[in-house]
Length: 477
Image (cartoon, rainbow, N blue to C red; front, side, top):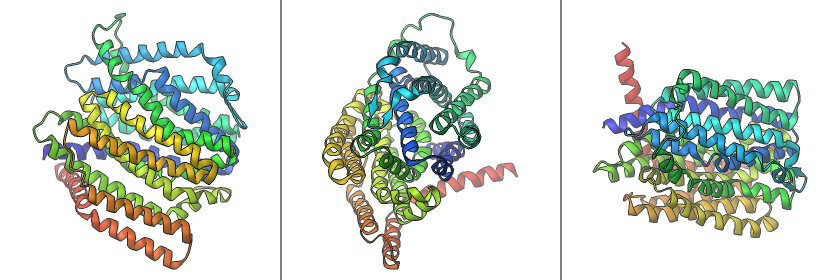
């Protein structure tokens, strides 16, 4: 049971840091949506999402290699971190020569050139923060990772109120707040983890450089493909409909992130356990049991979110954004399957099969682009949400088949199909009837059914976590 206890312990630690930072994005929504028009909010989101796709390209996604190779006990951590820093800085120098063509990007009423300096600073600072974050996590400093999450929450809150509320810098203030918070995280990690000690004076780390690049370079197109699935619809919505509609769609996408909130806390801990236990003889049983607990929790949270999606929208966004709730139920299903797909990514990580991660992601990307082009002109933002759901389901099917080459996980597909049907029925009822006592009674019944289907794995998870807490409490006494 030690491996389960370790997983539970790491999950609790990551929850402390991740929960605060993720919840912040929801708590800030009422303030941000009141300080910015839907058009400005849509533009700010496009800047942020553009940076998110540029970072893996510029840094060669070396932060993923820093995580995976720092987990290897046989690897010299100094070499790993040094390669990460040098790769990030070298990539940024090359990136400087692309300023002009990038500034020419223009979609409808959105001009990236208006924010080009912000984009460059954002890429460098956030890229370095991701590297420090993943290296520290892989090196076993999970408590520092958690503390950084709390500090990042406080600094983002402070800078957002300052730049957006006091100075009223609009889109610029929204982005600068994120950059300033990331810079504070870099300083925190450098001092507390003493990262400067891991910088090697050698010009070239023989062997490890090639191994890390071989692992992380295939992840660049993989991350881009995920970005296309998750974000390209926002560009297409802006192109076909405009920034205002994209602002509504962006606001709607924040609420399904509650599913990601709970899932990411677990995935951060699970990646460490997946690598540690991958060589054990009972790995198939371990992965199957953990997957059942994980997927059961994700489906249960998704079902509850659909029931309360109107209430959350009313609480979290300004009145002018309220209609965005119509996109939320479909996006919740999409997010549910994205979380399940991320679990299977741990198999590729443990196997160091980053190329297969790319190949499987490609199936979803092609599906997403084709359906976006077909559905957005006909159904608007709803079409984009449907395309995203379909893309993630396709990737799940592809990965479920492919990962059986490496490890046999019992997904209990009949149960997953029933859970998916429940979410689809909930979504249909919510969007068709929109309001009424009978609607909420029916939604509550469906949620109860979902909880009953997953009562065993949810109980096992709760028992594992509470047992860990109780043992700690006894030791303290």
